[in-house]
Length: 339
Image (tube, rainbow, N blue to C red; front, side, top):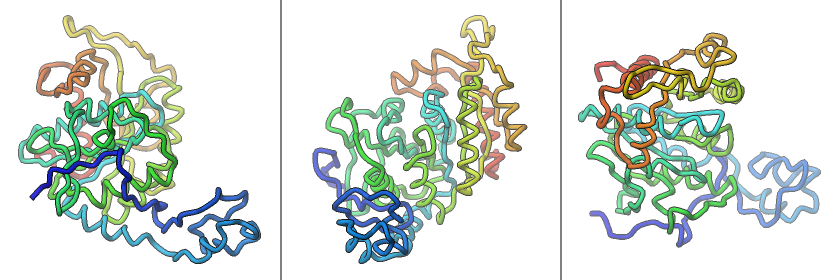
């Protein structure tokens, strides 16, 4: 039975501040230059360790895999498909796309869908899903996701903030700890899809998610971009990150690809693809091109009001484009398009 307590950031969160796959000791001083790393087998034994206040702590810390990884793998065993949503550049509509992808999957009432918001410093998923004022409820089974609908749940740090305007000013280890808690302590249950919304770039959050999910299996990543070369420049880095991290790139989506007038359906290229856009990049990189999603001011409006764009504008050009992208995502992930 669920209790009436809720988790907030006004109280200390019992988070194991650990690196992605290793136990991370609690250090009493900053790591010095040329530090081998507190999780390294040479921790506390290198030349740079001499005189360091952390030397005895690092030397005595047990080495080896993070013992919570098998716990996470077991916790997520009931989730059939896990998909990362990535972007190299901020502001390309990644979180917006995540919410629309979730609504598209959840349109089939037979699907159970979850969104895990790992954008710790800029959580926007709750606002877009219309559950910004909700809190996390705790039971003996763990933290419960906030349910947008009977088959669509969300977990985000936003639910833990005393105020929606409060900034989260955390270093990497604490971010890693909360992401681990989202995976280890949240009772996701039996799900068909878990979409992981990430911040822009290739930082701590991405490394943590990849490391923690590796054992349980990830279907792959959908990379989002806009047509401009400035965005594509960072997407190339994101693709390189995925390859180095062993993450399958399901494909690239070009968002904000032209503006479609809701009245006359005429399309204008607001952001011109000066170097060929996402389609050319996909061909050059040898990865699938999943399609384009045009600009539609009603998408932003739906997000501001926390409503489903799919439900409100099912006959729009953007909705048809999104449905095409969803079909391609399923194909590349090996999911039956009838499911």
